Length: 580
Image 1: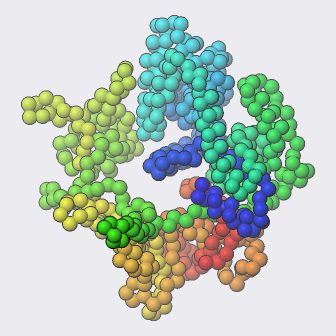
Image 2 (image 1 turned 180 degrees about the vertical axis):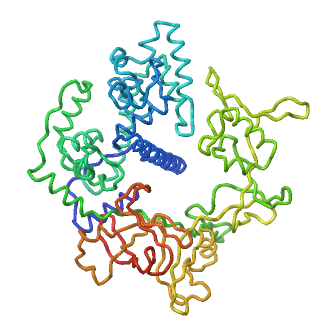
Image 3 (image 1 turned 45 degrees about the horizontal axis):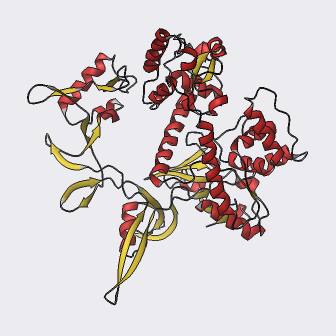
């Protein structure tokens, strides 16, 4: 909402009073910070998984499409076996049409099109099952249903790649179908839409909330999906897909939404009629406009806030000054500094399940536990490409309960399950939290890199951690300081700072910028390490594509600073560019 407010204010300043606003609102508008962080971590995990699956598809000679990615992930999740029939699914059958994506709880009744409600099923069996849940179709035959449940439990077991598979098993064997799903989802949407509408109604009398499904269908019907790729499917790997959604939503009529709602209500059993383009050259005009977009990225600006709280007591005014770090001051893990077998290192206790690779196993401090784990891994056939195999630490029984597999004897000789292990880490520049307590943290959360000239005119860098910045601000100093021997600050680099790369400044008309040219040279700072700066193309929403530049050092070589001549710029919320 904060970003929305800034965008709306900029549009009002530039264009005046707004006549109409159309909003497509997500459901996670009002959630806590911890929930937002959890969602971001899950999104990053899914991005990595999608990139892994894309690589496997290329190895199999398959096209990288949304449907193929989904097919392959569902195939892996159900252990390459049809959970309904028990028949194995070969990779050839997977892409032949013999196997279909199946909604566990029927789409027409649940309106749930999420990954958690999908699996694979042979087409013939899927047609027989029709509009029923697994229990409704198989439950009348108790012996067969018991066998299907037992098989589903084995197939939908949690793995590193699919940590929520067991939740799908619970949905699969659910006896009572949740008929209230659609009404609950509708109520959620109504509430959030109402709050957004109330917020925006303060500056515009005509605020309309548009459903996301309508935008999706019209985007497809108008051929807008292939503006950013060759297929008529939406791509989320380019940030500009948000602009296309906004354009489609702006051109959506109420009659279109009514027709689309009617089509969805009746399970899409008839062909959806064509919707006329908003104007004759709409598709071409949209492509030209989208091609010139400069994407604005929210700057990651970790800093501290100094707040003064005043109160009166016994007729006197007392001021309490508080300092709050606005961002992650250090890595989350707290370590203890210990000497073990003559070696000084930082130790931390972690869940045994957190061990996923052989390299992580080597960091386990207790040699006896390490040997037990290695023995168990050998029983399961050894490491899988350097990774610890599934079911090494726990096995899920028939009741869905995790049973430990690693034990140590207690003083009476009885086996005790090992649930946590002590790990050792070597941390450079560790900081002690408190003087009298053995608690250490890793402050390697860089705030910025300062590029400066020394007294001889040579370019140098100074990598500054967030911890250091907080200490500076807390004591009234500037966050940006020339180090000893420094003469002049050239620029600073933070995550998501925007730079033009590969242009000379005399080629740029700042009064009337050529967006057609600038879009090809605009990058954001993706990550920073000492002597190594990654810049990702402004439009990229993924960090795995090849649209990036890397600066290593201050020379004129292939990856030198002077080769790219970075020019720091600012992109406004509405996409306007200016030099910093």
